[in-house]
Image 1 (cartoon, rainbow, N blue to C red):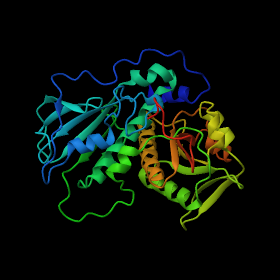
Image 2: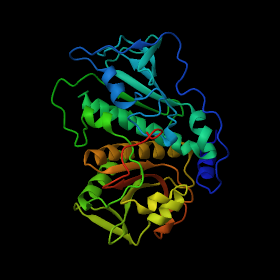
Image 3: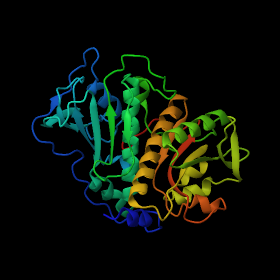
Amino acid sequence: MDLVTALARARGAEPPGPDTPAGPPVPDWPGPGRALPPAGPGLLDLDGLLRLSLAAADPTGRLRPTPSAGALHPVDTTLLVGDGCSLPPGRYGYDPLRHRVHRLSPAPHAAAGATVELTVTPRRTLSHYGHRAWPLILLDTGHAVAALHLAALALASGPVALRLDGTTGGPQASLRIPPPATGATPPDPDTATASDLLSRRSARPPLTGTPAPKDLHDLLSVARRAGDGHLNWCAAVGGPAPAIVEAGTDGTLRRLAAGDARPALAAWAAGQGWIAGAGAVLLAYGCPSDADARRVRRDHLHAGYAVGRAQTTAVRRGLAARAVGSWQRADLGAALGGEPERNWIVHGLALGTESAGPPGKGNS
């Protein structure tokens, strides 16, 4: 699969073809599934980690703590478990529908803690989105990384090492999670509680009401930190003075352009008209047309991770939030007067102070 060509095609106006079978929602892991045991003192709680991040809340597997385009969840999870964990050392495949693990082989290393490797089954997302699938698959992977990292923070593990550099197609991303820290660690300002993580869901449109400027500034700052400098961040806001703004270094919002960009965003986001009435839309943009496959992976993984972190922060503040991943002809940089094909919209997060209510069946 030529990822550069796939992204160029996904950014175009061509509509996807008819749906095809999505196939099984989880891999056919060998051997019997085993329950994840409770963690003793000083051990990494793998049961809690996976329950707070990836475990399905319904028998179909569509409702999970991490969002996914079309609730198709293409991301698969393998655990490389060392000492200091609630499971014996080994390599395990995870079944999020049944919240069970399957032992695959002995552990290839004996380091304390666990490495979570995320691979993908493209067929699930391709079944509905066709040629638009690959950017969504990478964004979904980034969201899964965010969910796992937030779960590790909630469980007070040691410092987590993320791999989102895009150097390999398999695994797409990984996290190295040590056992609980024994000494004092710097507090993470975006740490969520277990209750926060289990209750988060993407809000149902419409999302109305413009968030307060401080909330928008803080969410843009959360996304920028999580994006690790690989992307640009701004927000299209409604209200009495619609504009495109970015987070200033002085704690205020700096205007990039005046006027209401939300109708254009609705057209660019696969014609999702409700976006034109959203209170605000946080946007990650970058990944130029001449980006190589490594950069395409890196930018989309970081965008998914950063929007995942920002979405959780938004929900904790009582805002309605919904990730928006499919974008066509969305050359935001050119629209802002810059050079064409240098700064495409990679990901978005629609925000409001109110929504239509909790998610229905099929929403993630």
